[in-house]
Image (cartoon, rainbow, N blue to C red; front, side, top):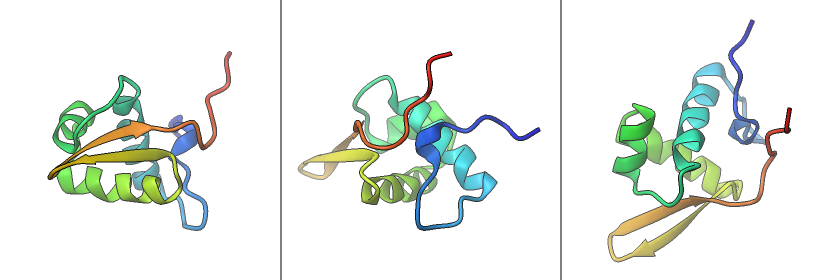
Length: 88
């Protein structure tokens, strides 16, 4: 049985391989707490900063996350776009 992926982890227009889905699921779950920097998301999700940055840029293109830039630092937040989890 495959692990449960977050519905927003699926990126249209590209192959959704298991490793990418797992990484994006961890990132989205880490971001559900609110605004965060890449190092914070990296620490919470236990993924490398480069991996987090790569997947955030993919999710940004699909408008699943948004970026607010203040100087060199960026605050990442989840948007209302993308599939939502169903209430069980």
